[in-house]
Image (cartoon, helix red, strand yellow):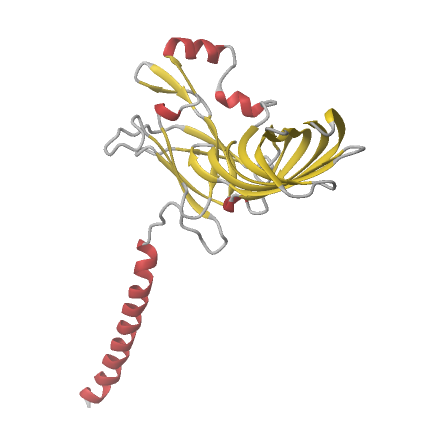
Length: 312
């Protein structure tokens, strides 16, 4: 009789124990899981880790704790955080371009350092190390203290009007030119330069110049323009872009049949390219540009693949 009563109770206990063990086994990996820099969550945010070290990424480099940091998004949203005792701070950010700065100078040795830089957050690459070798500003401790007394701290830059973010690019290319009166397509060296303001991680505006020249024994023909331009990144994390611009061109020729001529007219171009990061804020940029110019008696269309350097 006793066995018939105790067996159902023991069976229930065994079932409950199995259920509890299963739940514990399922939850344990989740509880013990640690996100790594560059990993994305279900919302598309990237786990970002910021470290402050006295020797950069050198293994065993001493950490700098309690550093107050500020991260600003394109639309002005701010996040404040502080490094822990291990010199690390972490947060989740959507893939985009951000501004990272220290709120106050950081003393390392006998010098004060501060950082104010643009960072690009994307999947697989979201670990930033701040160290003396990449500091934006460095000064002896006494000089830094005087600057702070005058209100020139890094944090103050964010509290008032800040200097606009700038970009620049230089491209070397080889262009093939066709024109209305030309019997064939001719080639020659070409190039483009540009500089301006970063409006957001997706939009850059500025001014630039584009030129092409063909020189040989029978004469020289050249096309050059000054323009206003806009560069657009549809997905900033992917670094692919489109550029368009319009301006005024000079068309020059020095040919035996026509003599020396110089004319002015409207010009425009479209371009597509891709930034390949090679250093902090520096990218190698292959591109393809289609450039056109027209005067009262001459028109030119130039297609020029090129390779350049973009700094932003």
